[in-house]
Image 1 (spheres, rainbow, N blue to C red):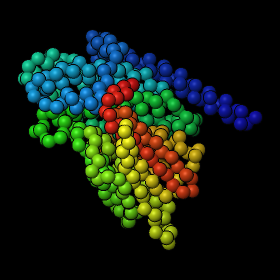
Image 2: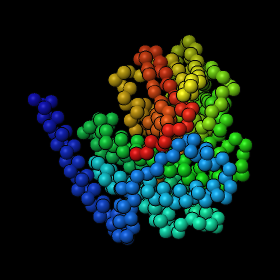
Image 3: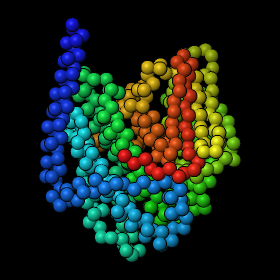
Image 4: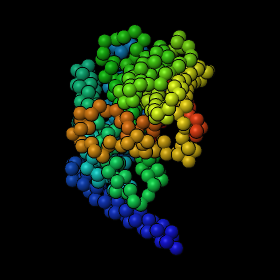
Length: 395
């Protein structure tokens, strides 16, 4: 009976939270109407119903082959139309989040950044000349900088929501919050990629580079760099670091964004190093090496990171894809907004690593899978699509 009562109480709590949130959300829409002119709000609503145009890696490459003035103009014109649409989609979604997440001051702050960027883009007249394009590019630089801290800022809002809900519901059982974060962060990867791509078309040309894309990237050397960075952090934290053995061809090349690959491998290797270091911390035997295999197929390049760090229980596997579920102690709630401006934008121990990595993998048509043997270790398979033809998976 007690059990039933408890469940009923929990259901009541959750539904009253939901009711509060809905009431709050209605208030929020009004609030947005208070902060921006009616005409801007209408424009934004209109655009948030418009379909977003996804682009593929191959398209970005074909487009940037020769960034002469015509390319810059075409790219600017595309972004001038596309970015407001993508921002409008996100603002409208930020308005109607469940459990009162829309009212967290940090989430409101992010909403206001997006609204501000939306207004600036819409106020800028159509890009017709190279002077227009230069002005537009300066604006893009400003917008990109404004959005630098979106991930940690939303993370703070979500962390504070997690505290509010601590008593009532298992965190990873809130699918709507997680699917919102997936959509929101995926969209952000896309926005940053498009802006970054345009900005870097202005950089002095480098052989084999098209904006952020390296057309002859060597996965082996990027993986190697990421491994060194991860070991460096492990050394600092544990005083030593397990060995890492790499297998695969150093000559292999593919077109990809080196930053994305570095980010994903760094995260996977860091997790493995931590698991192995902690498992063998007080052991007399040497920590077993972590193995990384890079293999090339017809469609994919797959990178496997294998450790013998003790693995994850099968019941715990779904949790590794939830935001803010972290096995490392979470320093997030001790952070203030000012810290975030100074802290490096690496959300290392905040339980953001794996879900974000998977979004980066999927962004260009790849995938990230984790398979574990409890009592032994974990294998992570990172698939990168070689074809580069899949469009951005836009939410």
